Length: 68
Image (cartoon, rainbow, N blue to C red; front, side, top):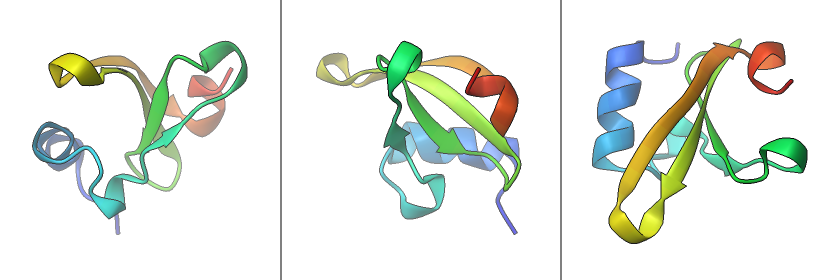
């Protein structure tokens, strides 16, 4: 079972590359973003400003909604 939203946000803040987040870069129109898993069906897309160790949540929704 995947962690709850609050746990995922905390893990994103603490370690973007924690394995359960399944962080990966996107391609196409969203190529400036990355995605992380929230649940099996839901994803978070985010913009990472790595040089400043900053993240901006872009969208949260079902797999089909965030990859539109």
